[in-house]
Length: 318
Image 1 (cartoon, rainbow, N blue to C red):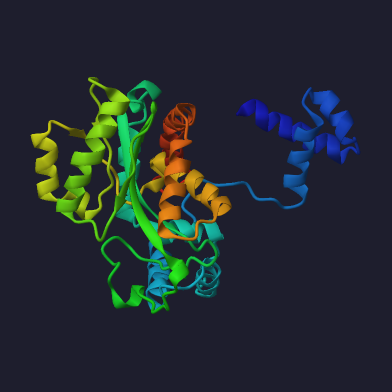
Image 2 (tube, rainbow, N blue to C red; image 1 turned 180 degrees about the horizontal axis):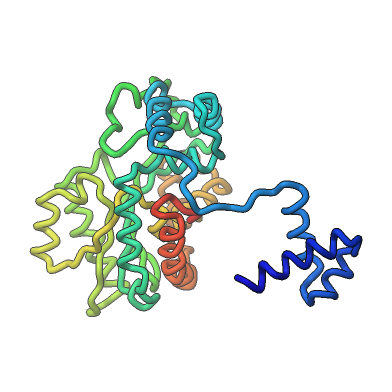
């Protein structure tokens, strides 16, 4: 730290003496770009990045009130109103504050800290799972609504719409490990505890058999009501399945989300016209995912953990 400060002082002194950036870099033994970055930051007025929280609890409460007035506002609208209330922030900060409350951020940070020293080999023992919705209309997917877990059916979070034949969709359950992907399950109707346990019985267990054989594994699922119901917990206990504890609202920690994105990108090219074609395209895209892709995603887990810790529990780029 002391050496860097001394170098910066020397750069400033030489600049005042009229030296060029090239002459300064040769004099102190660093790159010309480093000299340029320092001088630009010093003389153009660029501020240093700070790790301190850029908003107050009062400011966060103000944002929540703005969101609750209209759940369908765009990110730009939210930022504009928050700025008008006296809080100067970026779009990214608005996005982070809306998605996670303080308790959820703390739980994510605690969870990540506990898993900080897990190796890729340990993560390879985890069977990740998730559900995802696939639509035949790839243009307008509807308005974004800002809501928390449990608020899905609130009147303020619902918007009337006209249903067209081309807006056919299907919900899919899948699982993946470092060794590859398991069989897909196309879900009919709503998922409750009973139907979720049927999925576990007929699709999760075969996935585990395919990907792990007789080896031990740990099962990951999010905290959706059907997944965390008491009867589902009993099902895991009765079947001797170890379940990985998981923080709420953490899709950035689940590598299977990246696989869903891969499948959806391929569907844009396939352009299915019927429900059967949509299902066939999903299955074909899922089957094309290689073990190498899965292993690369699993190898990203330590980086995802570090990102959550660095972000102090806030959402990450993953």
